[in-house]
Length: 300
Length: 274
Image (cartoon, rainbow over all chains, first blue to last red):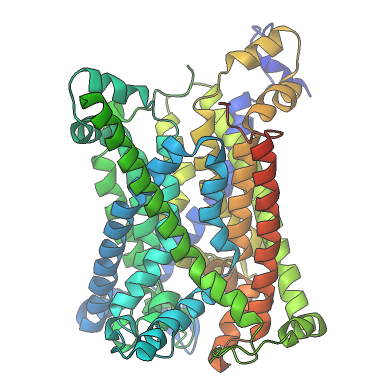
């Protein structure tokens, strides 16, 4: 119990045996992240230099896995395809999520929380069921094409087992993340600044470009990352919506740990995926200017 | 005249954004409506023209597989939700309350799981557990692995509300002799509870329905997503649609309740206006 007393205002005396309270608060989280995220990722990095033989990993240091990834053009195609798909999805989500998040933050009033929760509620239905339902709506025998057929129109080929359908699936799955990230930034944004901009003669567009957008860039960047990263690794969606020409990097990667059982090669693929993800995060990180973030650093 | 024009411009944009929000809800809920509809139909592959039945619902309650899967999913959801919320709340308070020169670095550490895809979290913890620790799939490693993501999301949600929190309220409470824990329960928590609740809810949902992390951590233990995944090969069972429909019914009952509470102003859920 003594450790709790350190925060009391009279505790000016140097405490010898007391753990600093911030360590007590932050420590468990740090240990948790190290044990459940950092160590497993390090293990994967190590395994990527090992070998798999008859479904067993064994220690035999080599670069063969990376050489395979470099040599076989298929892996490059998967990676580029996944990256392009992720870029397209991020862009669509960015453009659509901004007005939506802005509306909830600015005009949602007392129902703001409910409006945001409505974006999260679809997650109560599993990804697979929602993808299957999307397939039921978009696919050849699906709602849209059947309705078109009844009116006597041609079915929309682009929606059936194509990369377009896979991208639509990704937009469907990840749009809520983007809206929520921008919303969380906008609720902390002082809209009075827009009045100031207006008084100083800025039109709505200029006020947006020079005030709202830069001051909410961190939230937007987090949103972009939250959409891009899972899209890049996506395995389930392209498999069911994308058709034969949509084999993604994630699909191939999960196969290494599933059907084919080549864990070492899969580990190397994981490392590649992780490095690309990190590069994207760093790239976004460089665009963040803390002085124009609107974040004043806690205590105020 | 110009003032009038400007006002209507604002109104115009407001309505346009409202329409965008409405269309997004329709897009998000169309597949869910489809799931609910299909759960009542006799043939879920060709559910048109409608021919309705409650067979799927009867099957859910008769087949123990779905019950087990539901219970396992709930265990993972609640376990991971509680774990994530506790860790994240403590971490946010620790980081915001006490100045530290490592603050930015520590923020990045707690947000770092967001930058790692679920597939990677699942696969790396599978490889780590199986090869380094020699553990086979179990529910605790699934809870922990799911909480990795949960911690990051909870951290983000709680942080976004706590940056506006006035710590002088805590100082005031302590001047009057409140111990830190009591101060948290009686001053901090009543103010920040909507974000703590939101953090729990989000980490619960993510873990409850997670396929990729749970799948690699659980081995043969069934959860709702893994049963769905397994049954895809033979075509999805309508029972899964029925479970989803019942979950949605529960969620929307809660939302309707929240709406009534907000409407009447009994509970404001953190909203400070009138």
